[in-house]
Image 1 (spheres, rainbow over the protein chains, first blue to last red):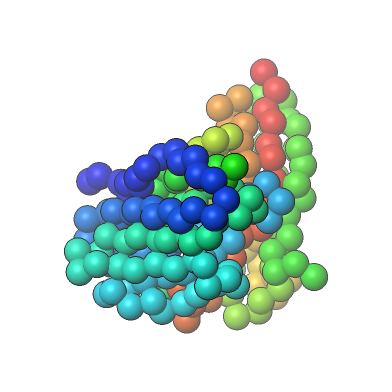
Image 2 (image 1 turned 90 degrees about the horizontal axis):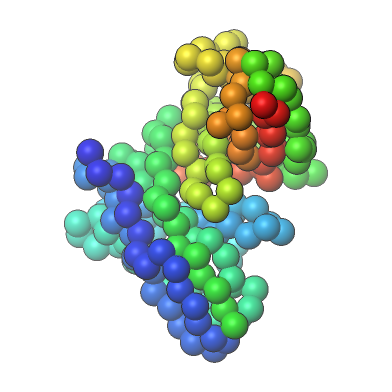
Length: 114
Length: 111
């Protein structure tokens, strides 16, 4: 079974621009979560989607948004980029996200904001 | 107090030794516990999960959980240089959709 895929793998943007990252979950998985990883803050939860609905959101500004499509693929968008948004953005998929369900991570998108 | 505490390390052990990685958590409602391994520049990969008090073994890995003490650990037997990585502990409530990660413990296995 193919794993979680994320595109693009690397991205360089300048301050003020916006960016869209894409995630395709493991086949059959309907829950997609997004995390931001930085050296200073570690891995932090951004949001989770299931059946095109955001069920949970982390403590990030409104510049960070996401959506999920009917095929469970998900995108996240960051508008008005700031230098501090430079990070590894990780997508994780699971069957339904509840209980003991395990999350499997994609390779990540490394975003650099100049 | 951080929600999940791990010693940042590095924890240095010789090849063939047992590496012991510890994690404490503050949310008593946590019911599932996950250990992920992350190599430098890569994404986290699942090592083990544990849900009940006691030990759970999988090959060279043993996870230990003590909910009363809010403590979970990962033992790696016969450590290999390829085990050198950062190990992340992540508790989760059954009612929650998110993992809360510790900052991770960096493990170095010396040949």
